[in-house]
Image (cartoon, rainbow, N blue to C red; front, side, top):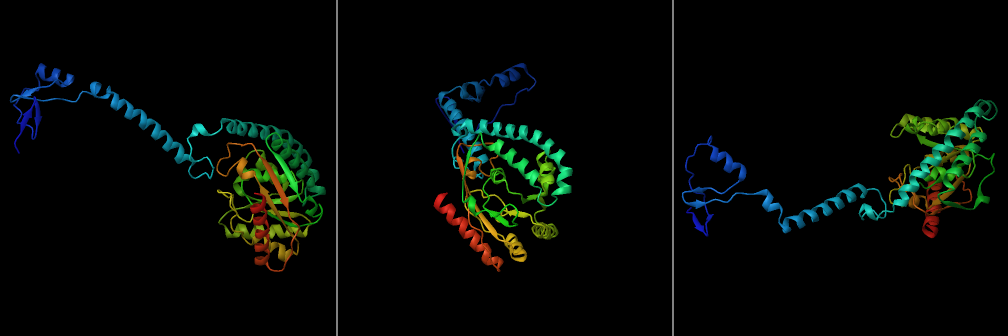
Length: 332
């Protein structure tokens, strides 16, 4: 391929370079300064970063890329959170929600420290006088939950008359949308036993308080732990206590009601106690699943349905789910 020149610029294959001494001072100086050399009478042009990057075109391209890459990072972090504003840059999220989240955990920690001491002092007497229901501990938990949530959102209850008596054992079931579901349900003041992951019990103060309240531990994906949990629930019901299940098994990330597992309803059938369906509305909007660091403004509604009974766990499971789904569709 032949080479040619146009206005001093080389076009085509480079010409043969003439041998030169690399230890010469002129070669080192020209290499550093990127100055053009002449080989066989042809002018060579070298890349000069200072000149090239100072051009307005390159400067605008770099600015646009910075904005584009920042949006990619923000979107990738929020894409799987289920948060409605996940498609917007971080600057569009309200900073007040983050500030409210910090205040929320500060309040819950401050209240938990003092109430935990009270719970510890009462624990020996609770074990002697009320080992299975532990009403005193649940009263302390109600005070703690009420103090924590009251400054941040309002709770409206509907159907409180449908709750069984405090001494009537039952199986309570509810949809699960947010970390705030536990706080909201504790404000009911009923001494039902929650089912919780074993890792939660390792949390300082809160985990220890859950242990003293009689919360039932469960290892996920462990069949032996599941059988032990079911047996313990049945024993507690026979002793006059109540248990609380989230039949979905986990929090909903998109706010939609998931499928129900039959464990809670099998216990209700075997122990012949009623099932109380409860619908929670609004907790997922205030603190979405996966975004426990924020607290959005809003309100929560708790709808308590009349107790249902049956002899078939699958039928009872479908009935309870349909009841909660209807409430969420109408009022959610």
